[in-house]
Length: 57
Image 1 (cartoon, rainbow, N blue to C red):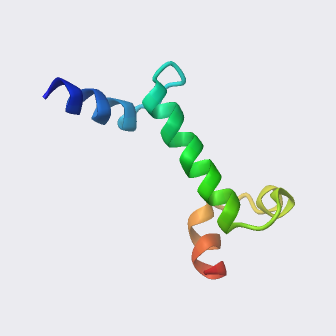
Image 2 (spheres, helix red, strand yellow):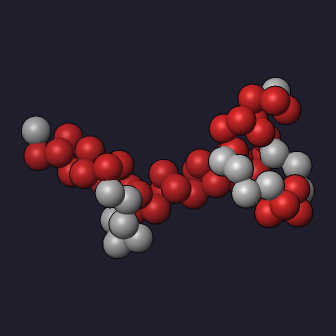
């Protein structure tokens, strides 16, 4: 149960100190970069990646 609580806490409040949060954030970042075009487009669009991703897919 403690392990589950730690994982939930990490997901709820991701901190750079926790390796789990770090890995999770890196994984999401990597996936988003692959699905989306060059960084220039992402920077130009301040909107979240959710709508952009849906439209591109």
